[in-house]
Image (spheres, rainbow, N blue to C red):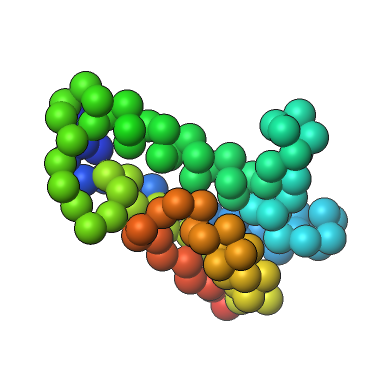
Length: 106
C-alpha cells in the first residue's frame, strides 16, 4: 500500500483473448454486467484501482503526482483497440489523468 501511495505501482489489464470478444460481440472490457449496476468490466477495473489508490493515500499520506497513484496499462487486440479507446474518450478516461492503452497483433 505504501508503494501505491508513492505512485510506484502500475497494473496491466490484459484483455487480449480474441475468442471471448467474438463470443460477446464486443471487446470483453466493454461488456456490461447487470449485476454491477450495468457498468462495463473496464469501468469496474478502473474504479476499483482508483479506490485502492485513494485508500493507500489515506493511509500513507497523499503524494502530489501528475497522475493517479496506480498507473493502469490496458492491452487489447488490434481489432478492438479503436472501440476501447473511444469508450475511454467518451467517459473522460473514467477520471484517470494517466493511462496507457495498446494493442497486440494476433
